[in-house]
Image (tube, rainbow, N blue to C red; front, side, top):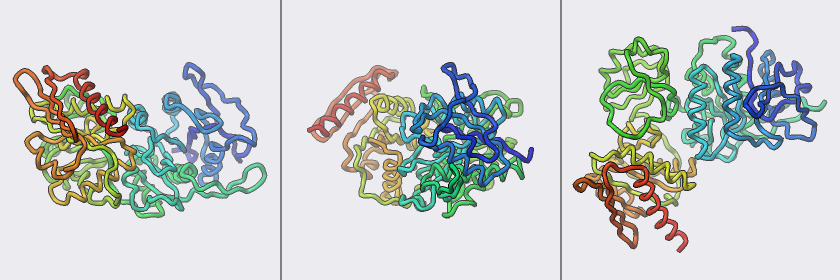
Length: 477
């Protein structure tokens, strides 16, 4: 690699005459998403967010080439849709390193961002992003294939709860830089921790341009001022996958694309291998692919160079959780579904219906395969219910969820209800001839509804409206 490295600061623009080397290029996008020269002058009174990030990058990586891509307004606000042309421009112009000192905590933006980030990180772009200063899960910082950064000195509980927020490293954000002929100290903010890490990553890439995002995340963890546990990742990174083995049939769509054919012929098209048994993995040359393993066997001896997830990963997350709250303060829906009914489809459609209604539903399944649909996998809470419940509570808190939907096998309903005996809604879905019978149990009312097979989106939206109506009635009353 050339000694110099290009870094795109996607932000609210840079006042380039404050930099020693200036800015190599300043880009803004027209109404058609076409990149054009950014000629806007940033005066001294304006919010110097992007400029501060540039000054920090220049301080710690003096020979880098900085590119300003302005998608935020003078107040640091912008639309998610503006990120696409910015990353596309970086991809076309071979800019591999991107600094995002912003993000969103809005769950409704998560899926759009995940699809976008997964596409461009699969194409070789490295994203360093600041997590939210509010201390809640934010996007894209929390995604596995992004290096999520937080600041030292924060009053928030990063030192014990970083896993729930997807934080990879905690570093200083107060840096002395020169602005308008005087030295200033940047504020205590995750925004200014991110460019410091971006500079470290740039310097690391100058010594080894072959490093993967996984290796760079490991390096970022080594620079952290608090100890970060290695390798506990959410399986949210997939762009295109090769699936081998006996998957469960569902009408629900995976959150990613799949590629079929002989692996030896299509391996360059995919970033992830998904397998259901060790035997399937052992006979494959996995190269540098990520792996999602959905079987039950011990897989510790399998060599995986990329990201790896299995049911054991989730168990480690639960055991390593330090969050202790005062119990869930959101409604809990226990949804018991007969085994032969398509639970993945029902859960994804129910989650979507709640999202359309403005509710962030933390939607849990008890089969590892549910992670392929963007649902939460939770193993059966057989040992310590409190440890299991504390983890759920931490997830609900940091992801700002409005309710919990826990899907359990119908035959295990009574055992599951012992975990949350005071749940707000109990629903049974079972086969009844050519129909599915839905039984709702609220605190003061029971409702039955017969649904023709196969259950469809309209049926599930009706289930959503029944739940939403009863829960809001209880809240209002």
